[in-house]
Image (cartoon, rainbow, N blue to C red; front, side, top):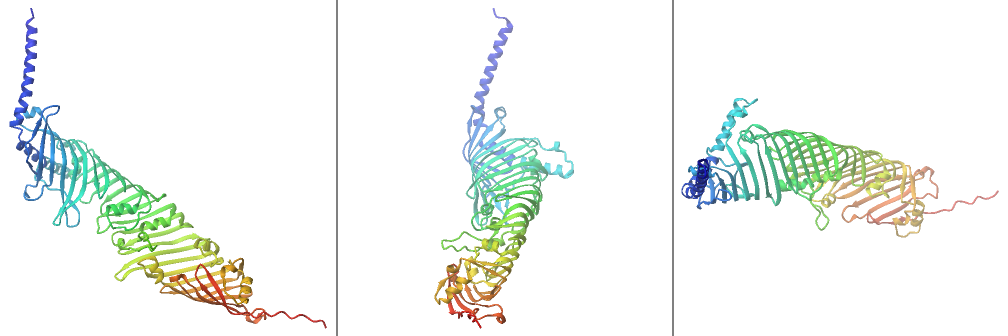
Length: 620
């Protein structure tokens, strides 16, 4: 016969089973009568501080998770009931506490928003403002934390922070709009992610993906003290942003006051610097994307002045070091700094800021300096070695400046062609149009190397000399600049030679009184004691004021005009004795005309030389 203890155990098991069954049976009944949408809306409102409305009747699920599914949920500001909802969702799934439900209360920790819409307020200065909630547990906890921080800024009592449980909020296929007097503007679409914050005094994290300006963006953010951040205090964060145009990461301290103070390590990389600007601030740098950029640095300061120290910068594969200061709080972004490179591609660097758009089908590249009013830039550069196209330079000092409609890139000092080189290009946006300036001063250079690099080996003498070019004019495009340029060109060379010119063959062809190509007398080299050129450029036409080459016995000179349009030649010249006092009958003056084009000049004799045979000596 069973013992009394055994019978009591059986009854206890049966009673417990009945109790469990009763609870399970009671939950749907209670949920259907007490967990109505008003109770859930009230709890959501208590947390958020917004007026919460639920149009549909909650759908209660018991197994496997006690969950309420809400439809057509909207949150509005209490003092703006007629305005659009600041947050709304087609559906919200909320995980509830079954035990709390038995008491007629609502307690939830996890929420899943399906196709939510968030509306931010667009400010007059273009900034964005989060919606204002009236009270709510989260807002009150932030205010309490702000008071705690204010009472002891240097050593706040973090143990006094609110410890309410918060939980996780998931969202899928959301959108974010900016609302202004002009209507709504979509900022983000396809926003999906999760915010995980177990309790207000605990660590929190956020992961999200979305589409901004046509590019997919992934964001990860975490902090051990989110509540301190929301209260305006300083707390560590780890942030990363990844997209096709740019990747950014930050690990350090952050203060979310209006100045946004930071102190930590930042990394930045982009396949195209111009592409980043065009994506983040459309129209600021018009033109084709050029040059990759990578940055790793310590960063400190706020929006009015961010200082990047020991910055490791890589521009289009060229690594450098330096210090940069950035500001985005003014009317336009500003970058000031100094960078030193071991090697640098000057053309790629200048192209990143030069106001040039892609060449059109006719080959004319339009100049657009409007970006110079959208960014301020002042960089000092140095490079042990640099290239500018096919030109190799060493010990380079340069500047890049963009401000107030002016864009300029200057090489203030560099060694090239065995001498010193200074060069610069400027675009200045004026009411009458864009004015451009090109400057070059090459001093004590090797003419042979300079001519080879410039593609003018047959024009530039072999020898030591100086070249100066100054051109200014309207810069709607490069052709327009050169067609209308004004300025001067000058060159002076000492003892050397002119390659590709056979003087004896030239004289022979002239004596034959026929037209001939200059290429026909190019098999030779003419030794010279010096060469001098001076030309005045007016409206795209170079007027040769002086062009003279001196050989030990002759003086060769040219005069005339060389227009840019058509690349034609209209020159007259002569070969005459260098010293008339020692001239012989065999050294008569030879005059000629040079026509044709830059690439194919031809010669026409003007006066045939008088060739006299030397007298035959007679015997006495």
